[in-house]
Length: 98
Ligand SMILES: [Zn+2]
Image 1: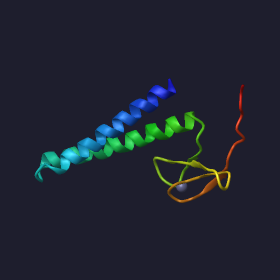
Image 2: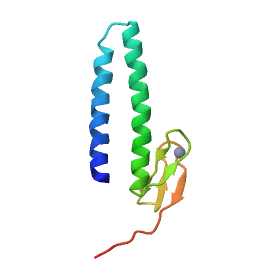
Image 3: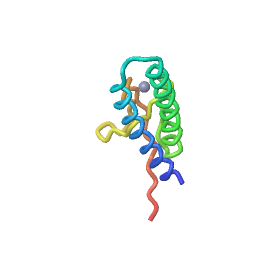
Image 4: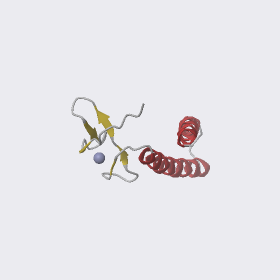
C-alpha cells in the first residue's frame, strides 16, 4: 500500500511541475494569482503527505521546517542527514530477514 502511495505522490509532483510551467505562460491576472495560490497550497499539502509517507517507510524527519524535511542516510558517516540544515541523527540498525 505504501508503494502505491509513493507512486501517487510522484505523479502528483509531476503534475504540479507541469501546472507551474503552464501558469508561467499565462498573462498576469487575478486568475493567475488564484492559480499561484492553489499551486502553493497543493505543494505544501504534497510535502506534508510526502513527509508522512517517508516516516511510514522508516525515514527520520527533521523539524527545521514545516512541512518537515526527510532525512537521508549518509553512507560515509552512518547517520541520517537533513538535506536543508544538515542536522544528523544516528541511523537505526538495519534488520535483514532471509
Ligand atoms: Zn533540518
